[in-house]
Image 1 (cartoon, rainbow, N blue to C red):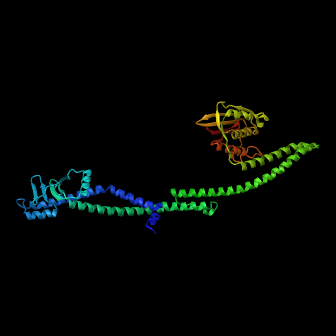
Image 2: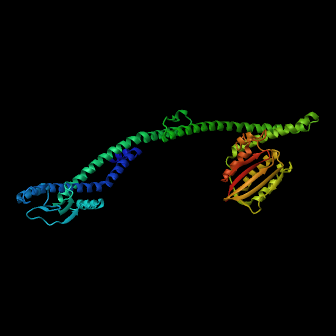
Image 3: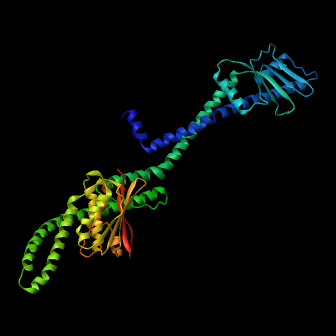
Length: 460
């Protein structure tokens, strides 16, 4: 197996990426403190030389004339690592020099140096390659009143700084790896492993959604991951039950369609026979014939409506722009209006233009008017307005209102009928038509003094 394959297998997942990112972020944090740390190391190196230089000058103070031999001076300078030392006391100046002290190339006064100055000087020291002679001044930590001045080579300072940088990098690398490993293990335990189990559960459920054993077990965790797992378990169980119900309904629908097809043939035969019964010479037979014919017609209508609903599916739209008032005016010619004496009030402005399938929208309005007539309403008013880019249509009647059962199951086929023997398909089909237009139909109000339906139709 190649290195690239091993790399992809190890770090292509979420766990590997978390490990790399954590290590990288820790290293970035260490880089941000690198310059201040190196500057502080440089300052500490120079301060140590200042303190060593002050101690070396004590040898001068022990002599009567504040003088030492050149050999002793060279030894003292070698111990300090300097070419010359000068101590400025309040009442005297003491000096230890080499035989031929070099001329300084740069002067650094540590007494007033700020952090940014120290970082700048440290960076300049590290990037140079030559050996400058540095003149350094600072206050002695042992004698606060004494100012110590010394000459020293820059190369030992640079070597110390690079050694310190190497140690700092090594420590940072170890810290980053340990931190990354701890974060990696924590996140793998808290997040990655549960998410992987969640993903595997979804894949397993997708292979056979109707198998109850593939629904994940809700965990006992109380955090966000546990909540996500519990919600997934609820969703899987809901989907499983819905698919099972859909399968049963599909089988039932196929059986009902076959039964309806045969039943319509039987009812058609009965309808022909009922016409003969209506012409019978026996008065008792003629008296029950209209009820029999009406019952057969209702049965035929129920079968036809059921077949149409299961066969049609979502309506196909032929969109156009038309005057809504003209469509409402045509509702006055419906048998539900002319035969019952229902008063239809067209309150729609003649200038209001609707966009959609005119025949399908007429079907929706026809259903609402017919339902109002069958409920016993004497007046139906249709109004419309353009609100926020949508055409809002209100169909209001003065009927007795919808019963509670009908309101609970409104728009549900075979369950939302407000009259005995009804299928409830009319409103279900009306909702399909409105949603196919991108709109909606809803019950706005239903009381003992009337019912109002609200239709929202997007403007084309």
